[in-house]
Length: 103
Image (cartoon, rainbow, N blue to C red; front, side):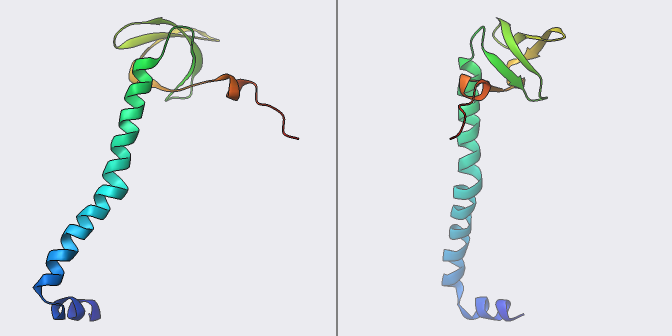
């Protein structure tokens, strides 16, 4: 109840400043980071190569044995499975496979 009274007492000029400020905060903290993540993910998916060790979004680990424009074949311990490129979550690098021991 007090908030409503304070906002009404501020006049219409306060409302003109408050709404754009809220939109700016939403853009900076929600929309912009999401767009950046999507851009990086698309760049990663287009840059994967044959022979790379990857993890899919469902958690399957494997090695890429064949690539097409929109799909790839991943060799796992159980055999070969065909996935969409968009299903590849991340690449396993040597850093993750052989971590250096901490002293």
